Length: 222
Image 1 (tube, rainbow, N blue to C red):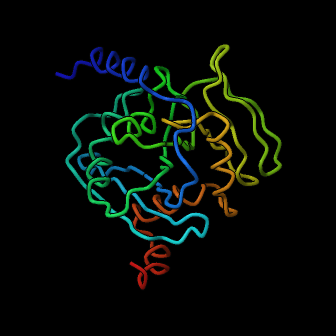
Image 2: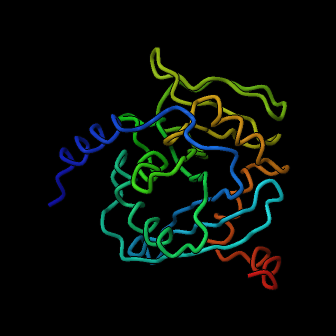
């Protein structure tokens, strides 16, 4: 039987180790990481893509598939996703200096979403780029691309609400590990190329999904 209370306690303890200041120099290699599930959730699939910055040229990607070790439990998703992410990470030839993770950073009830948890495990700066809000108070945004508001949980800022593209739902950005609140937003802004998602997670999502356009664009590169 899964001891959810123990896992929540582990999250609380790990959250105390998260660093929310910038612990990196100007990155040359930025990663995007995305996790999905196959076979009705029985298989966890993780993709990590390495991009050169600022050209956004794809240098490498790895996909890992492993048996899913934990059922879906709200708030404990990182324990379900991190094992596959770690396997993909171990296969990388070029390790990045900064990772964009499709999911929450500290914008989590116990301040340890998958971006924070994974960043701590691999001791690498991470940013959480989530497509939906897990906690905090939502605020209306202007339709102007680039508009943003603070994501607050009571009196604490836990991230940003960011309009990345017109007529699309906003992104919820939060620092994961070794990245400051201000820099989390700034780096997402730097990595936007006209799509809803920043380039690192956009490519990770596309590669993980085996979308034909991504395969076609990169068949001669990788």
